[in-house]
Amino acid sequence: MLGLIDADILAFRSCFANETGMYSVFDKTGRVLNYEPIRYKKDVLDFLGSIGKTEEEVDIRKERRIEPSGKVAATVKATVDYIVNSLDLADYHMWLSPDGPTFRHKIATIKPYKGNRKEENIPFHLPYCRQYLQEKYGAQIIEGYEADDALASEQGEGTIIISIDKDLKQIPGWHWNFVKEDAKKEYITEEEGLFRQYIQVLCGDSTDNIEGIPGIGMVGAERLLLTEFGGPTLDAVVLDEFCKDE
View 1 (cartoon, helix red, strand yellow):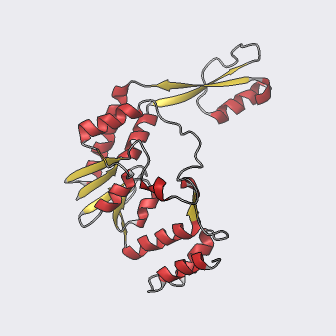
View 2 (cartoon, rainbow, N blue to C red):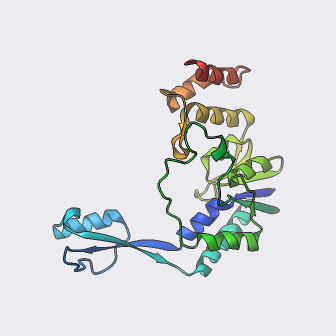
View 3 (tube, rainbow, N blue to C red):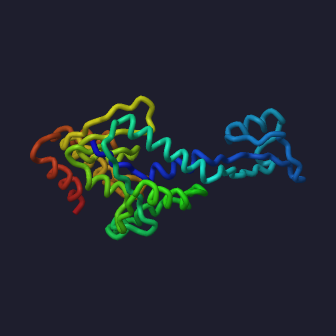
């Protein structure tokens, strides 16, 4: 079987696995209050409670601690080896998204594609990791297309998509979540893929700033589509909902 690997996910996870954010707490005079750095914000709040302070009374600072790039490369290798061995792959291909805009930005005429996202938290070693994936593992970049577009177009007989992106479950064929513990291969039929696609068409995707039909949520979309699921008029059901206000 040929593995189709989402290298965007692989790169981000490998980089973030090798950096941590540590918190220090200072009083208003600049004196440090915690003797050891604190990793999680909830533990910062617990610490403040233990010393009888509120967030307004202190200065909380977060420092990013980064491992050497070699550890990122080692994490990539361990993950790829795990994928290949778990699925007994004969071979694999992987894709990265380009740095610039894609066709999705061009066709998003109602709202900017991903325009609701604040400045993303980019891991320090991401540029290195992207280059490493291209040089060591042959990761491909197709200008104008995101990595998941490439995965979707390459999916076919004898392939399996390897990603954690739920949107790819709209694509028929074999899928595997390489992050979820004890995850099994999952086969998506054409009907199941189409159903998931139309759910998103009706509901939109707030993560990517894509609007759906006002007033239709997940439950309503499922109820609407289940009445026609697998039938010849499924396209007409969705089109009818979009045309109601015209």
